Length: 423
Image 1 (cartoon, rainbow, N blue to C red):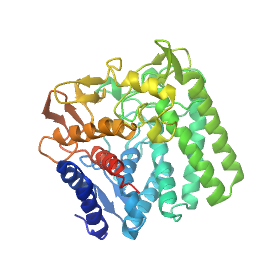
Image 2: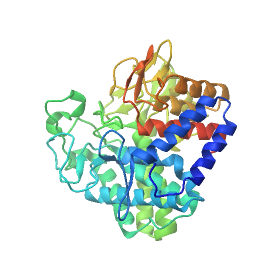
Image 3: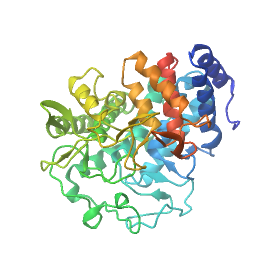
Image 4: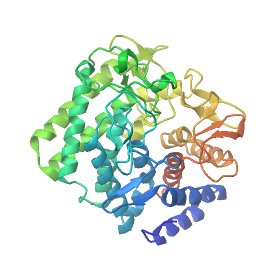
């Protein structure tokens, strides 16, 4: 394990998990996952923190936030962990200021990239797929760090500039026809490129903000991704509070609040559809009358709406949606001899994602179901003591990724929540 912090707080938490867990396998897997992220993905640089996904030498704005969230509780008392998370926020802000349309970045300006795409690249960018959630996650992490620890040193002039940039990009993408963003990838999966010379499918104005790609890094079918817009509405509320309390900037506060209202109104008008006589949230819409009923394992997802802070678990439209997406009516819901849950177009059919199983547990109040999900997660890791990306529902020895840091930490977050140790 890396040595930039004391292990005392971490060992104490692992001990509390072991003492509280009713299944000893929960504690064993938690310990392995909790250590693995710090040991293999975190690098403390001269001025900030760089967090790779694990098996790719680049940092995703989304993944890096999810990888750090379970450590926020320890950051309240451990100054080194708090500094680590604060450093990640600073690095994320630096990345957004380099290019708010990029989703993954290199540690240095080394010119490495996943693919030679037709878009505006530079040496810092690993990949430039525009995903709304990439701009949401860093704001969430900055806000939660402040709320949980009182830390404010990450609210710099650069943070304010990046936050203003996020608002501007979201506003520009409300009317994508005026956007400078284009993306094409040749010779790969069709889900890895945008149609219409890199502009994406046609859409009408809804008040929501356009997204080229899903959090799976697969292209959207219809470009108003409803769960991503839910997340955007939530973090715009966070920004309004930050602009008010920290920066005392009335103009930016009003901009954030107004955009939040417009996006929320768009979700309520265009993102809610009738299905079998009940109102449900669509996964994607285009503002032209077309919509997609499904959900994907990657977060933000419709399943994650209460977790993101958009609605209550008890919300009737959410519950209607939940019943739909946790059934065969969702084309990415799979059942088998060992697993049942949501997968993704990003992985083979009949592969369920531990991220989605953890999210199912984080968005229910049914303790018995939560226990079932935890047991399911630790019994299908195939002896690795880590979470995979996707697992075959009939044969856990068939999986994608030996270990996946985002999935590891979603399991940890779920277990800490279940055990009441997340504060």
